[in-house]
Image (cartoon, rainbow, N blue to C red; front, side, top):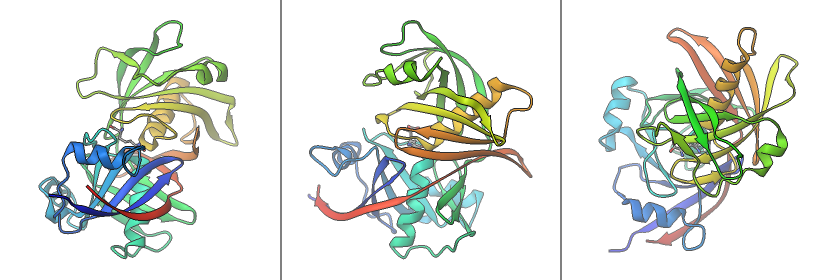
Length: 291
Ligand SMILES: N[C@@H](CCC[C@H](N)C(=O)O)C(=O)O
């Protein structure tokens, strides 16, 4: 049986998504159908696929509603290969823009809405030029070794959890970052049990300007390959660099990715430090396709 999908293409700093509305949870796509939507040659094309569904209308939404009964909307996120992911930092901003455009949500600048995700409920605030997502508490999990194409020797990495798994590797300079070949997934040892997104970072010169830390980053995303940006990856990269920098490191970071710039900040909350991510959210075009 074929299914007609009305979709919107959107992106956050070049991390692009196919979004579709299924408020009542009637469109269950399998991994092959999700991958077909994300296919850049035979489908719409994107780093991920996002279904807008009411938390009350899917099994995974029950945990979100238990955490926050106001989390009406769930971001059902899948990577380009059809695998589910806990969270997407660029995706949740584009999801906010999509809910507004579809008339499924009203949110003024400065207002906040709770969104259900597989990683837990995330608070999304509309800003003057996009959105800021509270990614919640974070975990600096420990050391790993990473190899990648065109890296002469294996490098140490730091595992960071921000709802989804990341390993961050510091490189020496821009030349090393630019020379990296991320067409194959970097190999992380020990192998993370659920895979990992891997970020490579270099500090800007100077590292801190006007109280803001500054880094450049490239990323290989679990389930999607190299992308132009990864929001949770930018948060993980800023957290790792902040941890390496030690006492006195700034709480606010500017992360330059191939697709643009996002902001990361660490803020104290009632349940300890949280990491927050800000940046743009763009909707590019609408269409329909039959799967
Ligand atoms: N691009 C996203 C992360 C998407 C999920 C990731 N590939 C994973 O499997 O964890 C972002 O902006 O955070």
